Image 1 (cartoon, one colour):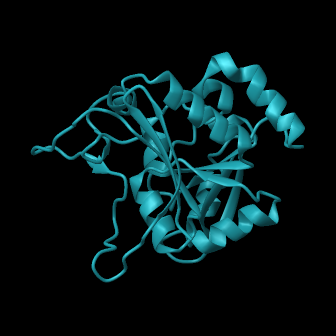
Image 2 (cartoon, one colour):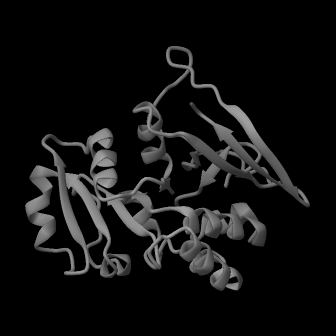
Length: 225
């Protein structure tokens, strides 16, 4: 979800995504549908901290369709709920987050893994992806695929999404454009992609796969490969 002028998050504003979306029910339905189709939802450390009650489950996105989402997963031969995988180098992380109680994965560095294993509840699994100070996202995706997760949904935020783009790991982009202008002032407001520069040296073009509309909201699907 982003505003017309490209803002996806206002860090100092609680529930800023809901403010930007205008509490759009169709947007929440689409998010629930994407989660229902996914094997695993990948979340960055910043998004984890900004969503202290987040579960990243289909029915939480749009409760009225909970039964339909569950039926869809059964028909697709998927487990009852998608897995959740948090990506962190260890410096920003909440070991008490409730999402860790339900078979969540923590993808981290070798250095941070030992410390996180002693802090993460028994319901979570800490996976040491690589040495170094940052998680190698290509190796992280390999670890997810080794666990049978072929359909991987990234819910960011902007920094993780930017890193996934830079690594060439994004096949499709589902983007909701909300009919609101957020503006930018002295306080930070995050765009869809943060932390990398694509133009002019590394332009990334998209192919429009579908465009749908509900009232003034646009629902866009792009192919990035």
